Image (cartoon, rainbow, N blue to C red; front, side, top):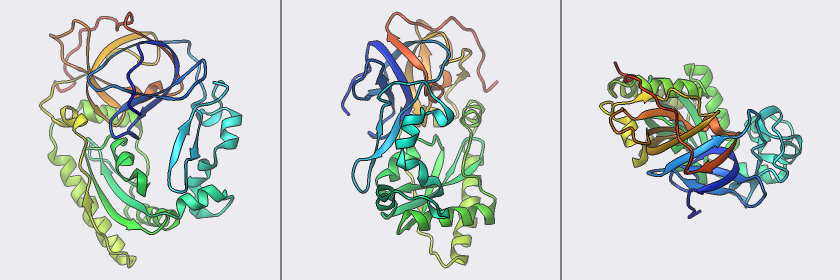
Length: 309
């Protein structure tokens, strides 16, 4: 995955991935060819969104018994329900993973994948919202890196995917935890971040309650703190000035240099805009969009105040 950010060409954007250990734009060339894992940290990203449609972001396939990998849509077809075309959705065995523990169809490859150890975790975001989630052993690190959380803790290592999802549902019911947090809510919370103490307190409270709940289920918790990646340090620092990006990343042209990345949220500067605060935006919104890369593209001028004042 040692690739460079392309300087030209048209791509279907699959969003931000942390699969390689750092944040990268996952890009599918429209002329066919393998996916490009393009690093964004410290890079200038110049692009123009082509049209207003959404395009298929392919599927996941099982690389072996314990790993999955992204595959581009071979036809680069328009997206239908769920962000895929019908052909990719029909070949995506991993789509059954979300209801694996509830019965129904289980492809052999998915059964083998889910038989490996999984982790149960809690992740707390900038506004104190805490979600519960799961990650397969090979995705223990990248799954949390891509969440965009401020603080997270692995609660317990479970023997397989079925057991961990049953625990996830049990704690959801007992503690009222959510299993999803909207990307827009994550962005707003980071824009309004004034201190880490509220999120830390919220996380500790949920962690204590989750530990007690697991004990009640005869499952001993083994809390293990997640170590946040350094790429997000500026965004996790309340003193770092920031302003919400005043343009829609899903249309028009843009040019920005990425300073920090937390999940799919980035802090970036614009060309010749050294006097302004860095801007906060979500590159995940580009998922399914066709973008044309090029140094000639730049963001419209903007003069906005800090999101903190």
